[in-house]
Length: 254
Length: 254
Image (tube, rainbow over all chains, first blue to last red):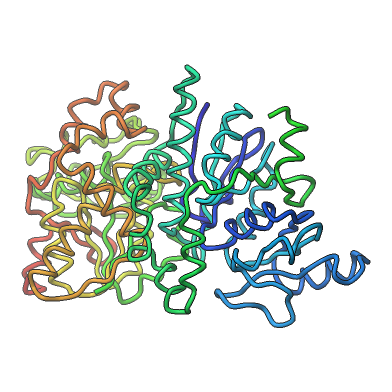
């Protein structure tokens, strides 16, 4: 198995994802939020490019009001008229169970849309990193982790999450007696993951976006995003939407 | 002072270098070779996009044969009809002193050409990293390090070199009582630099390109590229060419 990490969204255009497993990471906060929404029993999350696309999709769907919710942020702030922002803490069973979410975020949904060409795609955050590592190993294909980053560039927390994921995949594959070949970017991410895994609180100082969210009064969100392997949920892509992993996992025999 | 590292050439197009100091890194082997050429007393190195551009430039220059040399590689191999390859060991005073080199390499010259919009640009390798750190601090401007990478993507050794450079700049600035703001990518590079700085030999195992060069019988080149701060030379850009830094350093009062 070969593992690669796209450390920056600037690299997405050149990724050949055909036949590979893809994993999308946007720790603060889009993928942490999707994991929370799926763990809370939403029906599905549909990533869309922007607020206008979300509203157009809602109008075209003909779904009854209340069954589909508009969700997301721009620049970290809620979007006027939307039902939900981008705090994972908002995505409770009371708010989202059984519902479809149309989600648009500054960096995360672009990464989700970029991953559509892969053979199978999962959504990872620090909160479900062990579950995603098992999912990647079970699929057995070469895998690429797409770091959503910030404003088109590198973000530390996404690289750290990708690196912890790489470490877990490599460790598990070794236990299975399988070899794993890691790209330079996966080696680098793994090294960053090893440094921060036991002290995720350091990211509150070292990550630019963590400092920005803290200044915006989002300390509770940061605590929710920096929790390691607290849920077994693996959201997966199914025909353009992200669905809770339990369904697809069963179909895949995992 | 603000420091940023472009970890992948995919990010070059989005860099705003105007008014900033830029540093180009391609450890294996283009920038190590340029540092060696300048330390050996070449007149200048002109980076060009490809072999055809090098030959066209030579014809157009009207310079007497022998005064200008064609240099570089494609895919790690020498180019037919060129005077020099891309091994830093070839760039001895006997071969290059006083001469103009037209250089084209797979990744390095693209990074050199991408850095042309900066206020001042230097060429860095592991071999001159302390000298470049002093040069960046003396200029005092915000700085961006461009990692040439491999085939449009991330390469470990360039990120490590960039990270050691960031560490040296930050440490020096602190001694001067100046504050330095580092981007997420610079934090990550610095962390990688801290891991590898005292054990550069690990890159022979961890870097994909190092393994490729070793298989191609380039162990002596690798040893030359993985030597830390062995020269004080800082090659700098001057009107589209790279010139030995001593001249420009004096002009800049460094």
